[in-house]
Length: 271
Ligand SMILES: [Zn+2]
Ligand SMILES: [Zn+2]
Ligand SMILES: [Zn+2]
Ligand SMILES: [Zn+2]
Ligand SMILES: [Zn+2]
Image 1: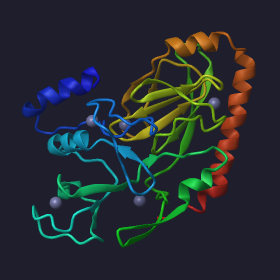
Image 2 (image 1 turned 90 degrees about the horizontal axis):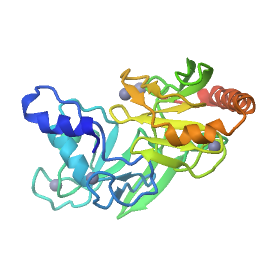
Image 3 (image 1 turned 30 degrees about the vertical axis):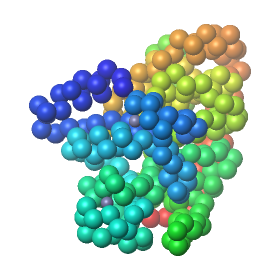
């Protein structure tokens, strides 16, 4: 756990309102062990998203400000820690989490397979049968709650303007959404593509992801305005060896192409 979240956890008893970072979801969905507690991740039956049950339990226990779009089902209809729950039980209220029988069906804010030219896949549906339960879930993100936006920021390092995309979800993919290259991870909420020099940085309080088309030492979460510090040393070394001009035009092309795809698909987003 990083220093901030550690001190927050320690000060829990003193605080009246506690906002905890969501640490139980990896930034790299290919990882098998929890970044924090090293327990094995569980996998959601829908969309194969990974999460740590232990860290989820802690989050649930201590946070008073729940900011999570989650669907919870039950694995055990005989569990008697609460009123009996049938197999089609499903709740979005994390307070109803039962440590013995609950499992996460899926997290709405977590995307594990986002592809640049396959943007439609995010809204695909998944038919799924498990122990007699039949799901037909369409993964659609509400247009009002999940709006993609973009902007330009001035790099604090190069004093050049760089484009940025604000994804309203947690991008847990380990491949670059533009060139498919495997990303390098420099923290539990930062990764980058050494081919495109694109930085992906996430806010663990809101589960949002900023995609930065250049190098800078900080970015800001669109939702909570928290400053996200970029670990840039390794990135800068690669960046300095690339022709900035070539790279920048390339980034702009990618960005406008991406925004066009969003526009084309925006009428498919439904509430
Ligand atoms: Zn954990
Ligand atoms: Zn239970
Ligand atoms: Zn909505
Ligand atoms: Zn790339
Ligand atoms: Zn945030």
